[in-house]
Length: 85
Image 1 (tube, rainbow, N blue to C red):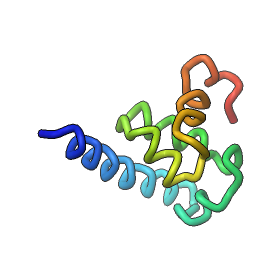
Image 2: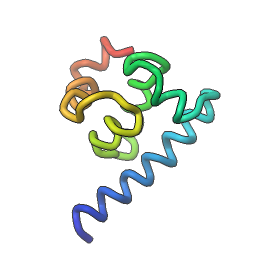
Image 3: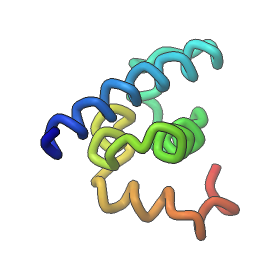
Image 4: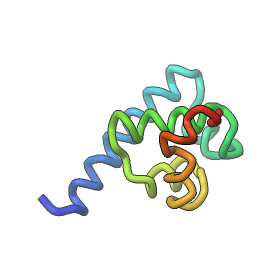
């Protein structure tokens, strides 16, 4: 299996997991995407998707509109978990 195929599988799993988390919170992906990057639990959703499904940072950056993938990586690093949200 190629790296591209693995990334596609992770993105699909991340999408399903994000949809479930947003539905549970009573929100939609459109609402989350249009909200500012630090509002509405986007950081919590992003962190959970990254740690449970291992979605790529690019997916988080694009789908949740959290900024550049490198910035998402820094935002979601374990050393920033205490101050996030």
